[in-house]
Length: 273
Image (cartoon, rainbow, N blue to C red; front, side):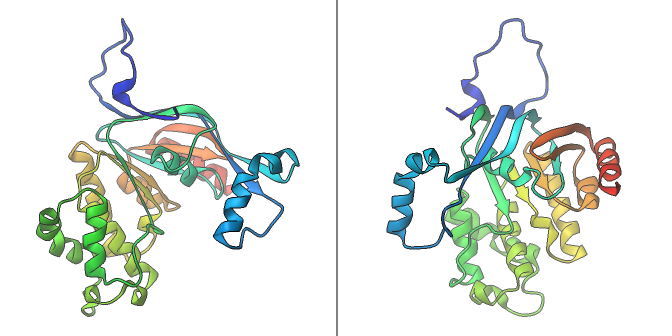
């Protein structure tokens, strides 16, 4: 089984006691995409199902291209850590987050988690035809909050997002929102709950400087409340302001894992070449 809870790992006799509590263990993980190169990917649901059923035969006919997105990556994350994931485009950052969240299978290796990881990205699914108000309720329920908890935190969510600063947008359908407004509301809903493991994929890239500052402060609060935060960002400033540890992936391989300043210094040298 690719993903297990940490409680299922047998204790090793004689193992050194570490006061830090692990929340995510990624052990020699490979992630491989299989891309059908024989068609456009469009069509009816029936056609899609037929393609899935014929996948093995198609692979044998060499119609499927394999993309090795993550290659033999291993690390341990601990409670209270905020870990930045950096790398150039296509380096495997978002793919790795999806695997930790349990949304992608691994080809080799294993992922163990303590608690339920929650993935937040700028494309997180909310319903465009429903109002922001209704999406706050549905998003909160999807994260396991009770209706009473959502009602208690509702105004804080709206205020944090800032979408009502120029009008009563929370009562309008989300299809009327700009991409920045929608992203801010998604983050605000997710940040209203304390998470065991919160995975953030470029969610801080949208919004003005004031909202980014609020978001970074909230991430620090989540860490203090014993959660673990992973942040994928192309903004080195956001990583520096938020994370004390950074993992650098390049072409699916781990290049460095260490203190933020040290890893970012090497990464910035690499990107200036």
